[in-house]
Amino acid sequence: MKKKFNRVYQFKITLEEILPPVWRRIQVPETYSFWDLHVAIQDSMGWLDCHLHEFEMEHPSTGEKEHIGIPPEDYFEDDPEVFPGWKKNIRAYFTPDNASAKYRYDFGDDWRHEVVLEKIEPMADGVSYPVCIGGERACPPEDCGGPHGYGEFLEIIMDPAHKQYGEMTAWAGAQFDPERFDPGKVRFDDPSKRLKRAME
Image (cartoon, rainbow, N blue to C red; front, side, top):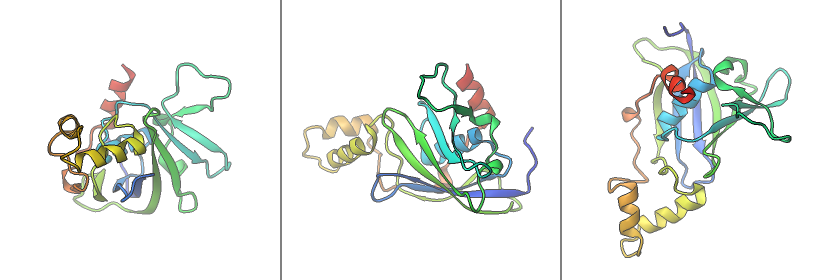
C-alpha cells in the first residue's frame, strides 16, 4: 500500500561533465526514501539500473557528509559507511537550506549527477506521482565509458565516414538521437518491486 502524502518534492537532476547538459525535472512524494528517489532518477534519466549507485549528502542536523545507497558486503578499512537507501527518508535530508546532493551511478563509468531540490509544494489533484515534468537530451548508453567515452561515441555516430560508425550505431541502436527526450514518455517502476529484485 502506498503511503499517503500531501506534498511533493521537485528535483532537477543534471548529469555532470556533459555539454550541452543532460537533465531531468521530476516531482516525487514527500514520503520517498532515497531508494525510491534512486529508482525515479534511473527511470527519468533512462538508465537501466544495472550497476551500483550512491548518494552523497550532508545531514542537515549534523553537517556530516553521509553516503546512502546499497551497503557493500565487505568494507575496506578506509571505505566510508554506506547507509541503506530504503531506510533513509528524503524529508530528513533535503530542506531549502540543504538542497543539493551528489548521485553517482556505475562506479566503473562513474556517472555523476547533481540532484537539487528546487521546491516543495502541495500535491496536485489528478496527478500520479512520481512524474517527470521536464528535461533535455537523451541519456548516454549504458557502458559507453563515462563522460569521456560518451564524447568519443558522439563523434563517431555523427560521422558516417568513421570506420566505427556502423559498429557504434548498431550497438546503440539506429534510433539513438542524443538530442531527443520526451518527458511524457517516461514510465516509473515500482520501487518496492525493484528493491525485491535487487536483493535476490
